[in-house]
Length: 415
Image (cartoon, rainbow, N blue to C red; front, top):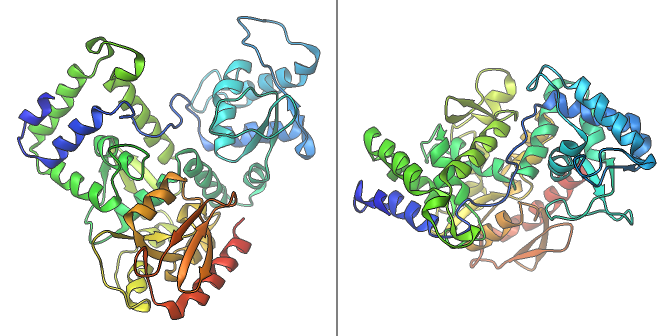
């Protein structure tokens, strides 16, 4: 690839070159086409609760309007719901509102299911996997969706909505918080291209998988290029990564425009969370708006719980190991949750391979159990990551009961 000629030996360019040779170069699947804001989603959920109250199932259209213009009798409620949703959501991000019968079924409902705000069911009324393609016949509002519409204040609503976005994006909010809050990384912003090339590679099931430390080093290497060189990288990729330049089936083709659009959508969603804002094409921590902003941007080593871990666990920084929040910070549903999650008792210092397995499981391994001096992290589907003392996890074994009890308390508080 010609980008290597821009600055021979630059590790960031070498990484980009190796990544785009992989047919999964775009990274993990995520929302790509939907434009909505939290207030519109709340309006849609309120209407779903109205048309299918008490978490009842609502039958939806299963065929595109172009193929079958009329609604059958069991779809009448769904049609009324969509008509009211389009009217209710006008004038925010869309003058025409969002949620036609086809768009609701094919675009919005998949996102809302992946965010945990609704449930989708097959024709047998069995709950479907939010991240797999299955034929959907029914929907209902979820417990999390009810939490969002019933939250007492706007900040709590943003927390719950942010938790949903984190689920939709595969657990990346904690990854970004880790990069932007760590004083030693010395990174206070991430450009859209830095996210596209490096951050989105963290914890992926791919040949270009990297950990957070490696991503930070690549970002810094990329920044060592001059502005003109970085511009040349982008312009070169735009020219070379066009589908028409590649032969064979779709997996063998590359499309820079499509890849960039995907990350643009990611930034659009992250900008709506309680944690981040997008300034131009830079993602930064929210600052100076409320007391919570002060909490997430607190970097003083004497205060930051991340550094307390090494003191309390008598552990030193070790190459190949990473600090990980067992229950993700992005699971917070209010300021109090964030503060109790951001404690050393909710952290483990684990090897990069184990950390990658947790990231690939969308940070769902939140149940901490003790096996002698070893630790297991399990999700609610019994997917386990086993952490052997001194091999996969570094900590002080006399703290194990405290860590387990704190984890149990957290999970009973944050459900």
